[in-house]
Image (cartoon, rainbow, N blue to C red; front, side, top):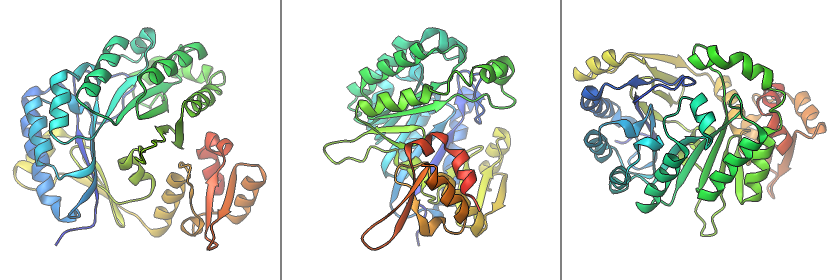
Length: 374
């Protein structure tokens, strides 16, 4: 009997180099352990397989740098994973060769998320990124040559030293490539990272000057035909009817259950959230013995799920049904944000009401959501 989970995340932690701003679960190098790690992933998949539905909607390989994983092991992993309508792999540009692009395409990958971050050499050095702008463009063309028709570019704004002109130049470069999807994140100095130590004070100083940066991103991408469908995400509105939103991430924002495999991977399963420990040796040892890896388990009560549904659902341009938000929304606060032009309530022909943030409310994002919480 199959389970109900239709979304699978697989964490591949290996990287050639750990960038200073990164706070993800990563392991530098360890080429000799890539095969053992894939063995462990497949063992964990076997243990958890009963949770998965017969047909999956999405599979997402994140990292780390999934495309730094040894090519033979990456091919073996992809061949063993369940098929899905959308299969996404994250890639760093310097790892993308014509052979790798063909490997991904032949293995059934339908979507690649390319970590460009910037096209400005000085800003790439600040970020400790190894790919030059030329390498970023070349990687994109390798994926196009392998017939990928759903490519996402990851970019950052708010990089120390980034001027408005440099941001505009990055947007120009991205639009020239015409990817189907663009993620544009604000750079954060995560506590404990080298980046926070080196640049944290500078980011605080320039915060006010950069308040209009994301407005420029939204304005330019909207004008180029990209739909601002989530706080930091944009997709082309395809005339052929394709929905080019990131379907795996959309499942998170819509509050769907998902299973995560690998070190540090998170799963949300009904009334509990699990987080695998981020320790590679412990993970490999447990799965070698066909035992579940060490993990933390957090109980999720109905109120917590409702609050998360509100916080994530309001990131989307479609908002969320008020019936799903009612448990966590303060009515007085809702009236205030409506009067301030930060949110609207719309009703369909059957009287069902939907709560949607206005463009101004979406720019303020989390502050509006906190105000709404009962």
